[in-house]
Length: 402
Image (cartoon, rainbow, N blue to C red; front, side, top):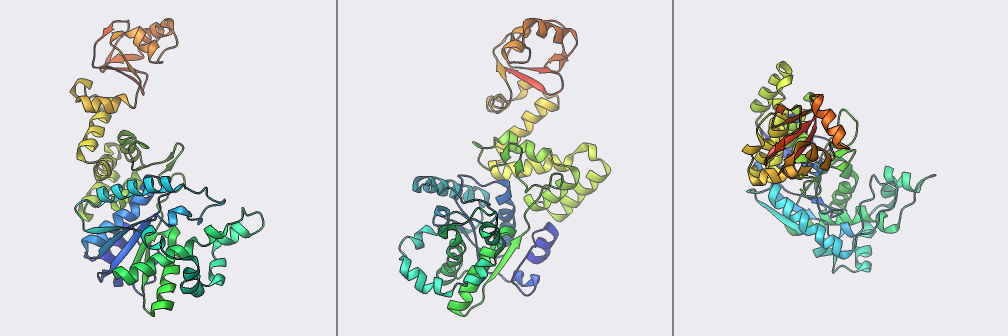
């Protein structure tokens, strides 16, 4: 399968300046960038990252950019209000964290990491205006939708710094064209306008062609919200922001139709494997095999096989009847971070101390009604509970006895 066919089948085709989508099959040097607005990427960033894996596997040369310079300004596209500026220390911390995530996601693949602060730190303001600003059209910049929204009636306004963001990103492309031979920028659909700025600068200043390839933004079909956003906020790749267990559960709980689409985007499984899972989902939706494989594969990619297997085992303990005694100490630690814990002792004390019951009387009534089990066995009166044990109240309320 050619790269263009792979991208088409997986849903990675949005807008491009290439005359034909088949032109992407010719190996090029390309770049993709993430600004250090946070110290982690989200699963929204992971979609173009997975697309890039296919670019690399088909012979393209990858440059991965951390936006130390652009991150000091902040991309205004899609924002209704001016961003708060990050401190230099925050930007430095976030850059280092993003670079580590690049290394994990693209482990075993050839790539180069660059930081646009390295070439912006020595450029004088006057030189930039003369050499770059002179070739940027204000008319085109003012025609951008988000600019119109920000400066129009009821808009929040926009500073000169944020207005200039597109030109700064455009210069990144020009610099990488000159210094690294980059002729392609890949990005999410929301970066189309910023990316075109670089194409125009290369054409005007170098008289050469460069191109842009964007992938659609992933949208949750059930909610219409940009993928990775939930009631609790974004789903992060950093386990300190979204735990490995919660990350695994996010994928495990997607709907049947979306699971097959996400297998195409977020895993490297073959077309044959994914089609087999699609057929099984259609014929045996209760098996949820597509979701289980999706959850494992994406968690393995981001957090490693050992953590993915731990999340699998913890899930099987909570919802599949596997005994808590079969978990390793590390796996029980993962479980303990997700549910209440209690010391070994009497069952009624465990229920009260963990918040499962408001009083000893309520705890006894729960037992009498058959609402409580220990390690899968219903119990109707209090008894001593040893560690490790899993106490369950109702359908989805658990306590780990350690």
